[in-house]
Amino acid sequence: MPGSTKVRELDAVVIGAGFSGLFMNHRLRDTLGLDVQVIEAGSDVGGTWYWNRYPGARCDSEAYMYCFGFDRDLMQQWEWSGKYPEQPEILRYLGHVADRFDLRRNTSFNTRVRSAHFHEESNRWDVETDAGERYRSRFVITAIGCLSTGQIPDFRGRDTFTGEAYHTGAWPHEGVDFAGKKVAVIGTGSSGVQSIPVIARQADHLTVFQRTPQYMIPARHGNVDKAVLDEIKKEYDTIYDKARHSTGGFPYDVQDRSAFDVEDAERRRILEEGWEMGGFKFMFSTFSDLRTSLTASELAGEFIRGKIRETVNDPELAQKLLPLDHPFGSKRILIDTDYFETYNRDNVELVDINAEPIVEITETGITAGDTHHDVDVIVYATGFDAMTGSFNRIDIRGLDGQRLKDKWAAGPRTYLGLTSAGFPNLFMITGPGSPSVLSNMPISIEQHVEMISGIVSHLDRNELELIEAEVRAEDAWVEHVNEVAEPTMFMHANSWYLGANIPGKPRVFMPYAGGVGAYRQHCDKVVANGYEGFTLSPGSVKA
Ligand code: NA7
Image (cartoon, rainbow, N blue to C red; front, top):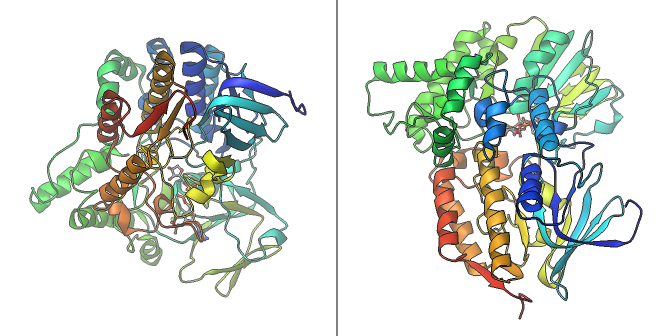
């Protein structure tokens, strides 16, 4: 009812219609029979895969695991074409899920939630959208993704550029024609690394502006034989069970050997084997201590630097591409296809912005150091205000009018990455403090959706109205999240996991690094102990 001021009473508002919102809607609406409204900023479902349409966009998780595991028929019937699905294929999959379960009919598209305020007299959330819709809802569930608020650095003169400029996370639906053009890509994270080889093949000239050289593992992408997929499908229950109890949400065989348990030659052989398998297996299926031991990580890091030296023909250029300032595994591991090979092309140039900082953006291009680079197109592959950025865009206020943004001013505080004290009946799917971005997302999303559904049924079965995290439990969880992150490689780099990519953002490690299996055990224990750490009440939480 756009433009209307009439308030609609609901059981649940779900914000977002990506993987999380789709499944949450299905569980609350179809399994529990609640009155649910989904609010989605895009014109269709898909979330991350709706927005990130840049050339080369694809998933780093293997296709057969990057999907829902809650519906056996869906799992058996959907056919993936390749090892790593490309963005259009994932979007088609999510569109299929929306059709199959009729999930669009209670979704408002092209609409953003502006505010969600907890109303203490009624124990309901008042939700308003930018389309003028107003809801009073018992539950609010944020399914807003972890990487949904793009960030473009505030370079001097940025708005004076008269050519085309795009952020990878808000790519035009009609695509971008790079033919005959001089293109700049700023940023060499996952989005830059996936798009650079593709843009290089299309553009007249490509200049890459690199701040941090990165470690990469080859994807070894390829089409998947139907027979292989059919075999996997026969074992789907076992495979999913293994993934759900693993570290990263993948069903990979994990080795418990240290990189120091073997002689040099054998270590090299194992790393080569991991390199040949490609993808995250290099991390999970070679040695157990690449994520925890600086010295072990350095062995893998030097191995990868060797590969870069072998691949890039020009030794000076190769030197600029070597990651030397942070250990392997301390930033998001990147999975590439032909990234380093791309620098052997005549039409590709690299600017190391540590040596030649970006001074300004002009009408016609980018000045770095003393050099002006004339370009027709600038691609900002500069990432996201990760994990908390999308919460901050919504005016969320809990008990006593407390703003979530204020509560999180020094870093996010959650219980289990699912709830925050002072915000009753508000749930966050893959919120900060949960494995989220350190895991294969659909596995983590499904676990949260199932847990939230379990909480809602528990409240209803027991004639309870509200659930709220206890401050004590939240404090202990935040401490635990920090403790678990402390011994990992993640503390040895400036990364978006730590908020380091956003000027002024507090340096707090946001995701839970203990692994999805351990995290699941925590959650299961909380439930088994009668929702330990939560206050459940029949009426006002303040009473
Ligand atoms: P990322 O991984 O945050 O990468 C952003 C890139 O942009 C990275 O290379 C940054 O360098 C660079 N960057 C950021 N700010 C600047 C400024 N001010 N100047 C120059 N360069 C800058 O985002 P992606 O979109 O690639 O990937 C996000 C996630 O999506 C990915 O990890 C997957 O989980 C999926 P830095 O490394 O910070 O020095």
